[in-house]
Amino acid sequence: MQSKSLTLKALDIVSLILLAVSTYLALVFAPTEAVMGQVQRVFYFHVATAWVGMLGFIAAGLSGIAYLRSGDPKWDRIEVAAVEISLVFFFIAIVLGAIWARPVWNTWWTWDPRLTTAAITELIYIAYFMLRQGIEDPDRRARFGAVYTLVGAVSVPITFMAIRLFRTIHPVVIGTQSAEAQGGFNMTGDMKIAFFFALFAFTVIFVDLFWHRIRIGELADQVEQLKLKVMR
Amino acid sequence: MFLLETPPDTSGYMVAGYAIAFGVMLLYVVSLAVRFRGLQQDLSTLEDLDETKA
Image 1 (cartoon, each protein chain N blue to C red):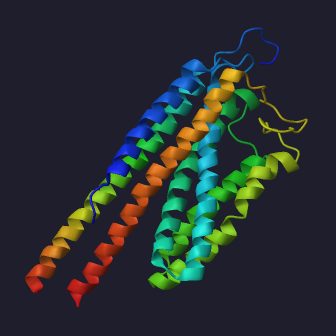
Image 2 (cartoon, rainbow over the protein chains, first blue to last red):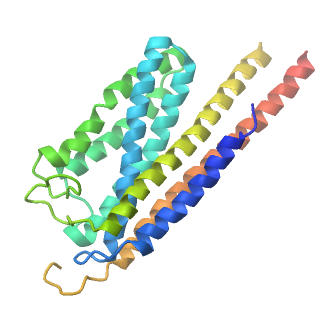
Image 3 (cartoon, helix red, strand yellow):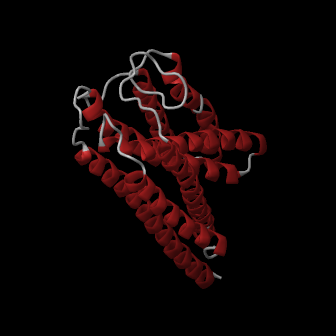
């Protein structure tokens, strides 16, 4: 196994710096929203984590296509890495949303179209790991996983569009929102800086973690192959 | 809440949100590091076994 490359080390450092700057912009630089108060600052990380969550689920679907076309196990490793990281970030997005909802909607959770589709998406990808656990043959596991992520990826555009297609209380920050939406606000220039910087920072953090997780997958495969060799 | 002139004090929710976000991210990074170290140990053990066998 190759030791950590210089590029990856640099990416680790850049990711940490970006996370620190993004936190500063969200907590200090951006102005306090006039109606909701400090809780609105959760918005910057809420949207950014949801964005990378969806990005990873789409990446997993594309890796699934690549695996089905080539049969190369590297695409299976990439797919698993993408799903795992996205599950973590999407979980953070859902929890942050619930925390934001409590003072604004007066409830932690409601079966609104956006919240429901987001919860279903998270559950679909938790089930992905349960499916993989149940299949012993590596080729079959990879093939089933590829088809599953391909079908599962359909939930991403549905979740994204839910607040634009249905009557919902979830606000739409960019675009036209439903008349029932509660907790919406107009972004000032400084808010936009904090928002777009958070999107950028979390994209870089995602790439960094993705790279680390793929290395773990490669190492696990090496261990598995050597184990088989030793046992023979 | 919308009739108030000054924003309500919702800072507790904000702190909770950021604490959870950082906590979960930290846990995940630790889990990556632990898994990587464990696999490296397994690999070196298996390489030793393979050499002994050869």
